[in-house]
Length: 224
Length: 252
Image 1 (cartoon, each protein chain N blue to C red):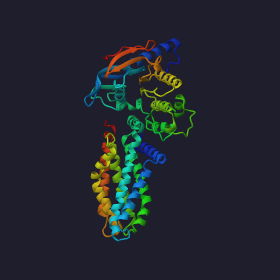
Image 2: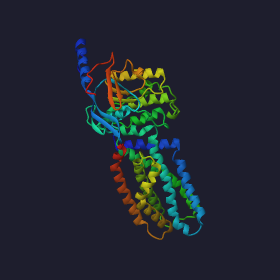
Image 3: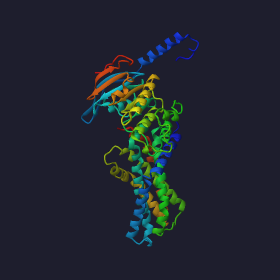
Image 4: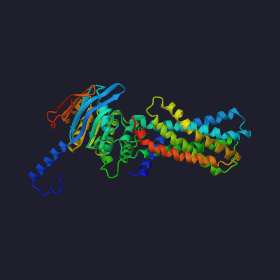
């Protein structure tokens, strides 16, 4: 059985489940919108300073949205103990992991796409640097969050306070990526410095953590 | 039946069929050697040894907490014994044989948001293409769900319908070893009878079945052996009067 075919199966199933249940989508959008609006109350969004902090605010909003998506991601498999059926099936475990990661990437990506115009309006933003770099940073940063998040969410599945455990594990391990995505976004929005070094850091981070997660996922999946 | 037997006399063919059946029954589907399973200091299974010859239906009885579900999860490869060895379908690691094992748990192992067909087709696709898989329509028909509205999601099914669909999911890959954890709970009397008949048919086609149940009467006339667990060990093991009899193995 090919990895690509099984991956596509898991991905299609996750997208279909989310489309029908809207478990994650509504909460993700609500959280992201809440962060944007509340921060806009805290300071004058028209000030030049907002350009410097908008990158950080955007990633706080997306981080919350990601955590919501990640918590729902494996919760679906725990209802009716479907995870046991997946564990007993002879399909490659990595296909399940990648299918879930890509599904989460799509969910967070959609929230980012929907929230971007809101950011632009609320914070009076105008991209000074290259627009394509912003898209690249968003993609690399989102992948960094969802690949680790999907892995650690699976790891914390059997813990009692798994919804609390996930951010506790995920935030420290994601710090280098968070630093990279916030500073790269700020550099692109202000145009003061080149974001190239931060983009390289994010790329290396993504490659390393995707590889490590793929190597370890089967052990995590089959742990009792 | 062996190929090339078409030209044989009927008596010879019957004898061959009989010999094949003896050979099949003499194979062991499950061998347990001194299995213990500890959860902290609690022993769910305690030094349990037994053999399960292939092609038979075993009814697993016992009070709550006797270790039945733990044993079934170990056979399915979902849990590892703390001590002892398990051999399933000739392999030393049940996980390596999982394509040949069907498992129905106490929960349905189904997605509530999907329809019956979507669930079965999804799980069907997780098995290798070379594996002989059951036809989804035929399977739904066999558990009496063929005429249910195809757009109806599993969340809208009654508990009994979910149980029948769960059984269909467990049978998808024509398993050689089928492990069922209380398949008859919440199922109406007529459906229980139909499901028991279905399990009997599977056994007759050569599958080995281990069925946990609190409704022993449902398997009367179908089960070949009754095994009673208490406190993680086998207390009693007896063959059905009309069932296929084999040696009792080395259980305690």
